[in-house]
Image (cartoon, rainbow, N blue to C red; front, side, top):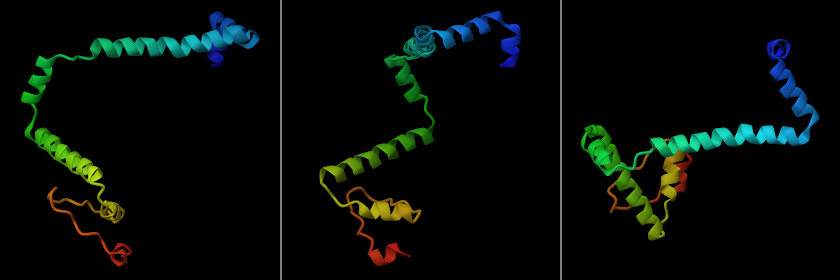
Length: 121
């Protein structure tokens, strides 16, 4: 920063103005926050494509492992939401996660709860 201070008169002017004038400081801070936000918003809007043909092409050209992961994630989410709707006890999932395990199962068959004595091991 000392290089800027020594060489740039514009930088010295900016520092003096922000130090001496609160309205200028808040205006400058607002410009520094709002302008990048507005530019970023419009860049995202411009580059965001809601083209149905493009989405269909991307889905058609997807690799098999990507399709499989999408299917698995959809099934797991469906299972989880079904358990929430049925108000089932899902503590076994948390116990398994604490032990570093992942419960995989048929979505229609419920795993029996883990005994508290086994969870401590």
